[in-house]
Image (cartoon, rainbow, N blue to C red; front, side, top):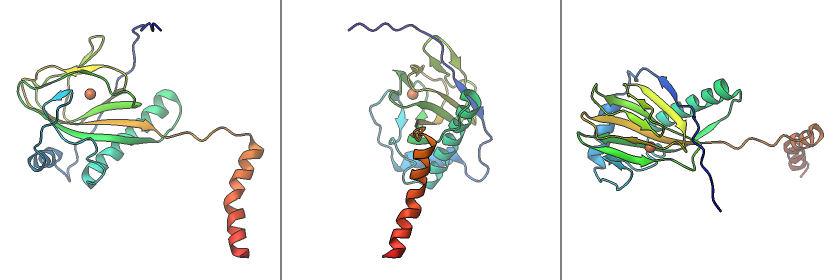
Length: 197
Ligand SMILES: [Fe+2]
């Protein structure tokens, strides 16, 4: 079966936040890299941590929570629907001079992006299919639909950043009122039954 792909524009969202004063994320990532120096063979041709560093590290979990809140805001502001997002993957990256990321996408996630922790004037931009380039700055969070292909050309200056993927949490089905009322009563019915026994 042939499938035709009609190129169309998709949104790329940017939010700039002040880097935390309590925790120096640049130092934290550099120390993390020293602890876990193994280089993985992925689309990112630079040091990149494991996929889920937020699962057992409170500092990275806080970052995952921040990203998930920003995605909730995007959903509410741009799509008129507040949703919860689960940060399924979160990883740290450290590009040194000459290092790059080749063309790739983050399918099948919903939203993906990068949080730039420490970049310089000559650090490479992120380049999206269609030719749009975004120059990173410290504290910038860039979020885009995970199907959007992107790359990072070889960088002249270091780039320390956090990448992430998110999925939206399932929305409860829109049930008729009388069915929803019965479902709402179930916990009380179970409790009453327990008390009886
Ligand atoms: Fe990517």
